[in-house]
Length: 540
Image (cartoon, rainbow, N blue to C red; front, top):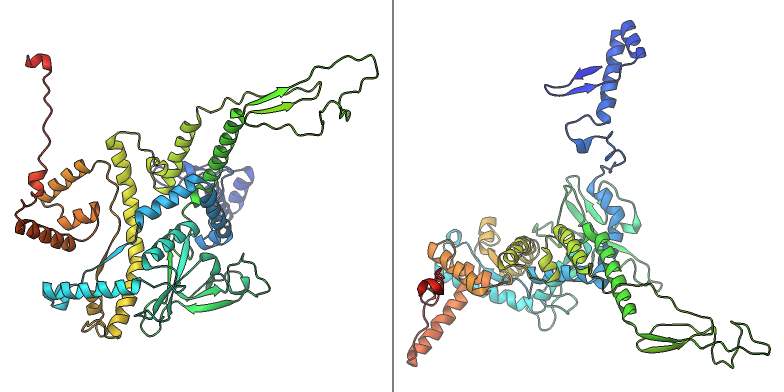
């Protein structure tokens, strides 16, 4: 029986003799049976998407669960963390992927540049520059010793936090207070590993408690439950205990704990390790590479096997395999390969080798192909993943540009999720203690935001051909599509103000000593000469 569901869609609903009989006796009951048939047909997949059908051979047994993000992650996160860390320790491609992202995003640390809103604060350029310089100096004083364990400076904490997010999926930074002898500020940062945040007493998740995060009815975190030690640490009789820490201050509204992770689904409470989509692929690739190396080493061994000739004897001959110490051969001895080894074989013994055909000529092509698949999931072009730039300049430049988009996105995330809140904590303490003067800071939130404006400058991107890229920057500068400050940040790092002041100083010194001043960029960088298409024969 054909049923029209829309203008362009009909459904073939099974209609048996019993259905027709029920409809003849009771039309209402027949309609109910027809509705049930329609529901069953819809359940077996009659939509417009072939990927949603359930009666096709390719998708018949493909029934992924439709559970929430927290339900899926709660069961898999411990294994994902452990396997991700194991791959980073033991598989080079995993180690390289994490290190490449950390180095490109954080480098030697994101550098603060205070940028107050001059129009809101009614400051002149001189006043704004003076205050920004003071704020940066105060932050630099604090950044020398911000670690609660007194091990790391702020640049090193940035790297640690970002690496922990990639390896474990998320990490937590607790705002602590302690003033050591050489400190100017009380603020300290304590980085807590993801494994230590869990439900009190290993209780199951509830609507208000998900993997150590206690939430209110609106889904906002109100408490983080942190255990006294890592779950896999040796206890030595010490009982593992949990303590709940408030997520934010009830007085100022500022966060007291920063939960750093990339949220991929609504209501997702915990983060997913960076390598999660490719854990199995990297593990198998690592095992394959290890097996290939082992086979190549074995095939490179040079071993000589000496088999003595069996001499006929009129007397009683000892059978092969007996403990004949007179022959000097111990049948129980192990035969092993070695570099330039000579091994005696017992009479009647022989050695047979399979041809390993090593080194494998297809190894490099296979690893490169797998690296492409892994790189797609990690947003890393395989050229950067393998550190192999063998293609043309244009192809290599395109690969770096694609990777740079990911690096810039993650750098912005790190700046506004971690660096900026920490900067606000420091400046708030500086204003409260009187080290910085910021009128209206605590009375007006708009004024407060105006004082706290900032930029975070990271390492410059990779340059394959500095001359070509400098030429492109000069064109953008002349067209007005880029500023000198942008070019400095992208190419060499640092600030325009500092470099401009240094250039003025250098030029003044050179002029005072009677030296010729440096040429401008437009004078130095002449457009490249067009190649002459005429051949030597045509010239003659």
